[in-house]
Length: 129
Image (cartoon, rainbow, N blue to C red; front, side, top):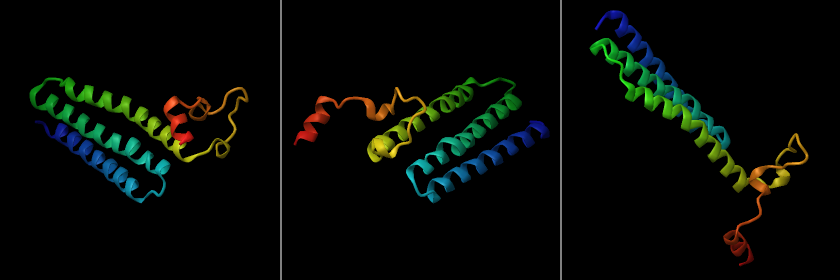
């Protein structure tokens, strides 16, 4: 493997490690769930993505073939991480915030979707007990 490709792989691994370290540190040090949500979904995702890209560069330089496994894992990670963060944020809001605690939406015709749905039969049965 040429020295240039080794430098590129090393730089990608170091950058990915720094992103992972910052994301892990943010997960530990941030106080609230909504603040902690950003650390793993942003920084750690970039860290894992950097390792996967470094792996792609390594195998291209070593064997001369493009590996699609790492590319597919990276795409899956970058697509699912925001969706997971959205689900966690909505669950937090539904469990912890009352409708009057939320800011008014820009459109007065629609409210927050997490509070607009009527309760299901199971939720109504729990509340009536």
